Image 1 (tube, rainbow, N blue to C red):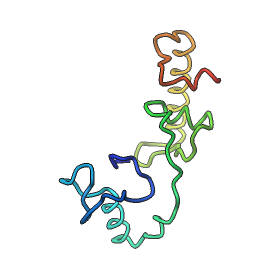
Image 2 (cartoon, helix red, strand yellow):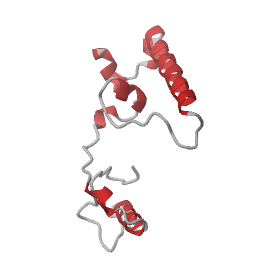
Image 3 (cartoon, rainbow, N blue to C red):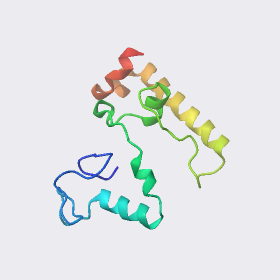
Image 4 (cartoon, helix red, strand yellow):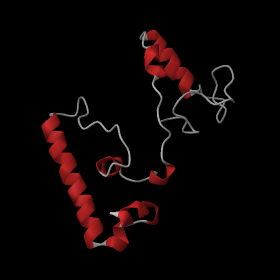
Length: 120
């Protein structure tokens, strides 16, 4: 997401001449997406509705949120980053490390904006 307003389904109402309302020196990210998809003949992809992001989860771990079923759509393997199985093991180790730290030192690693961990 590069839209300053974090819009996920198209440009805001203030977009004029493909310029961003927040920073008119830049092209609207949704104009870039549209023209890029048009060049690739993939405008059909823009018809998929993206659910709004949960702003309560800002600055929290997307991987942990996905595993705890707070968000969906995570991709486990990133192309160009090596073997998918190796990536999965690294991911599992990373999650276990985060959870262990939060369990052992809750005051140090359990931040106010991560109150969703209190429900676990």
